[in-house]
Image (cartoon, rainbow, N blue to C red):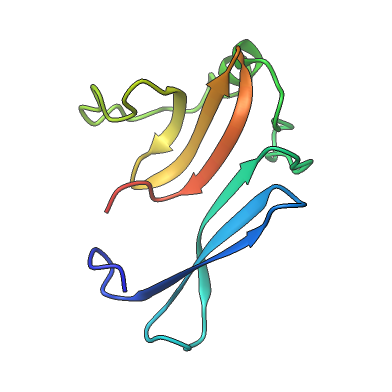
Length: 112
């Protein structure tokens, strides 16, 4: 149970595909809905605008330049991670970078 939601959350991982889903339900074992998606490593999936794992950081910034990102006082929120937020931590996409390229894409609510 996640206290922030007051609901049961289960992570479904598909490591060979480089994707995981956080699934939420009103009760343990109940009907589930996707609450977040994370792409990593070997994922060949891409965002609607064609961004996937391995794409250079500058390309991400260019492609998503028209989308307003709310900073919501995020100083230090991502720690030492090199990240780019599109939308909000309460519902948006977060691109993480290593060596100047996308290493992970998170879609969903990163904060409660």
